[in-house]
Image: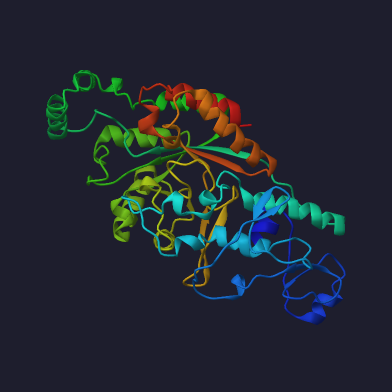
Length: 415
């Protein structure tokens, strides 16, 4: 309810379960129960918010004048569904508690989600519900006052591989040369040798260019650096390389820098804590924001780990290969742990787009057709449009021309 009223609509609300206090109140009021008390604004409640634990819920999608919704409320209710239970279902990631087969990286598959199966993944339905709900409320209570939100665009640069060839060390470089030779990747071998001679030619070394673009457009940008020991899934430059450390500190002078947590840290909380502390000591400021490797969020354990490690905000809520709203909203929210029945003190900032979702497209125009639709939805509800770009793709050279695409996206959507 606070997400709908306070965070999205900017309306202060209070709650009571005392009938006398409710009846005495002279301002706008809503009954959320199975039956109305008098002739007040009434939303018939589903049983979900009054239950404990997890149950396999049979969900039937209804149509609310063009908007998909669920948890039908019946004719007496002033809106046709229980907006609060439906919102809770999506924000809590209720479906991710239910039995499902994870993908090869241990992630919840997008095709298992209700939003994907019912074709509303690309709609921030929670925010759209709230806006329509507000219109109905204002007809009944024209005196309602609210604080209006403003549209926000944030570019998130995820740096899990800061350099393609440079600063890899003699053994790793020699291994890469033999690998290129064995697979007859001669062009890659030539690039590797060129970078060995001049590290500034590394294709992933585009940080100066990115900083210039960000200064030009003055948009909010965040860099998330992996700062982890080498492992099977985490193969960045050694954290002990002076030039790598200098890179991070130089970026931190101009932008927010925080932690892109390693795959290993998602399996071991002490590793996560060590990575956080190392990065904080390097940049001489607190590290409060996190992103998980491969957008791997295990509900609810990932957020418990982040809370235990004293992160305040997370930017991992989204899908890598599909555009859309994993939690059904483009508004930051606090994660609710259903098993513990508590709201965890970590704010979740959902992203709508990850650059890997563009790989299926051959032309930039196809990308913009998808993004324009998302942009219009977010702009309509004055939400947060967060896009994740990876350093690897920005440094690659394929048909989409990633750096050109990135600059065009900033120009098109940051205001």
